[in-house]
Image (cartoon, rainbow, N blue to C red; front, side, top):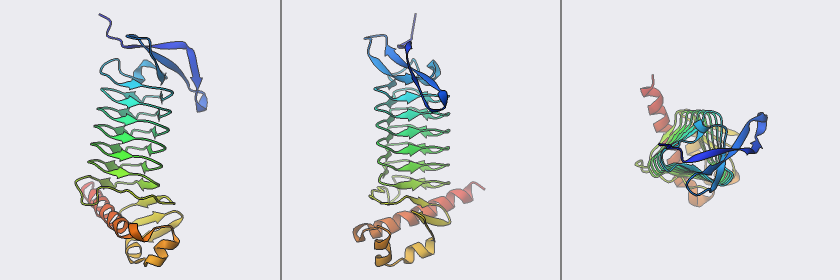
Amino acid sequence: MDARKYEILGEQVRELDGGVRVHRIRRLSDGALGGFVQSEENLSQQGTCWIHDDAVASGAARVVEDAQLRGRAAVSGQARISGKAVVQDDATVGGKARVQGEARVERHAAVSGEAEVSGSAELSDHAVAADHARISGKCHLWGLMRVTGDSKLEGAYPVSGAQFGLRHNLTVTGGHVLFGDKRYTHAQWQKLPPQDLARIGIRADMRLALLELTEALRKLSTLHETVGR
């Protein structure tokens, strides 16, 4: 019995940067067209997982179980999208990253390296999870938030909704806070007066929550680094 749920259309080809050629897929049950894959390894023939619209899965990336790719989302490298996760709009997932559970990555958000987004976490706008970052629970990262290094942010933590519309990239590690092109130690960051924060684009109404968030990320990152030794 043929368990295949889609076929690859050899005549509908799109060329990506670097000369990679991907082909549109078609569902066998109703003839509906889907997005693009480089090979059948990119999209499982099992489950309800699907690639919609003009979304693309290439390289050794895998979309499995009930995961969905929509819009112009792109999944590449050895990334894996599983569970009921959704990657959509212009979001990208690459490297060896994992998006799983009921997590959502959307708009222009990016997940790379060996980062993992799980639970009901959401990354949107231009948020980034990279390196070995772990985002889980009900966290919602948006704006220009960046979680990198070995940072770990869980929804069960008191600062669970990192919802700041920042004008510059914010990167938090165990040792420093990087905001735009400025670099601070955590002690310097915590002591910045409101007027200095205003100069770098942080509104007064978000100051306390943002300081709490960066301190939480510092502690979690430092703990992760200590346990990993």
